[in-house]
Length: 468
Ligand SMILES: [Zn+2]
Image (cartoon, rainbow, N blue to C red; front, side, top):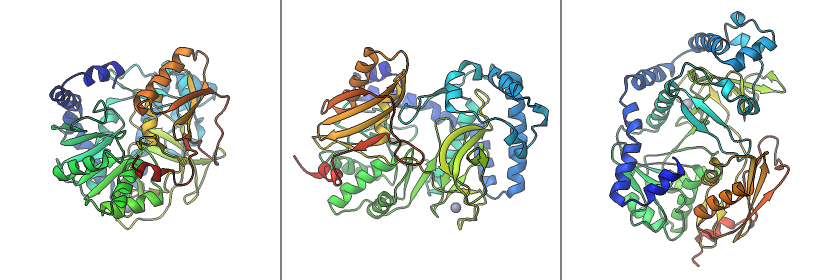
């Protein structure tokens, strides 16, 4: 949501805010009742029993259509394929895909207008934050957006969700102005959701959060892994439990130690979702803890040193989105690290499984007052930043944070103040913030860079559970 709109929203009384949230969710409500949604949903269910031939036939058909479309209507692809001497009529199926050049995030950011297709009337404008790479803006078609709603809904059903049940969502947005809010959440009546902020996690607020969950008999939670982990940590600290039917997570990797504690304290199974802002491909975790590719949204190639690797081997993802006619992504290097597992799953679904997607290992930020900030939450101030190539947040001490920025041309003092202001607002002015302009963010492993590093020492999370 737009910053000015949020400021305006926070000045409104509680009742008007609730009305605002419900108006905001009208689109999601309407999509969930549209014919296109049910058609996609029916197709998704059907694909759970498809064999390889059916997947291939589906992907071949849509691949040929979108590649032809891109060549004829999108200037970037027309030039790229002409420069490579590609005869587009000879790109007919998955085996031909390797003849097309791979495009990168840098290609997207430097050719933005030339990637826009003239045919899509009202595309969605999406952003990624410049946390571990260059921030990107791109377009997503309405069709793909509806397909995504259907995929998300199916994930909930895999977790045993019963349509229209109440779900508590811990979000990165700001549904309440600050953590002293009397209600601490806002209710979406039309989607039947309690919307909690992820930034109000502290020893002072945990009892209130759980009291509210109990009062509303919440049986489903959707959150970042780090948020769920902190909530489970509190249950452990109090040596108590909260029974859920399912916990849904996405946006961050779930580490084994986090999963173990969350399962134990919420006495439930966890259902993950892998996707990206680009919505090129996706995968859903089943009750057997395996990730099944969606297959009808996009094609996933696993590539190592420019070569497609065999099933069972790992590499980086190169994706082709089959439904984004607003801005086609064809052989787009997402650079997540995974691979086709290549075996069947005990859940009985025939959708191919992939290895757990590896990204970087992130830390939390703990404030002097015991507030806990997850890495996903910390990406929010970065989302409105321009002229930033990459960034990294380091907690140097309990009240001191360094924000390292690799700047682009045009980065000014105003950008610097804007960034400081955005972090101060989120972190409640509890830290001394130092913004450093650096030439590069060091890599920590074979693939991704870390966005959040905590240097407080091994048991830094425990500090959040000490009353001050
Ligand atoms: Zn399965």
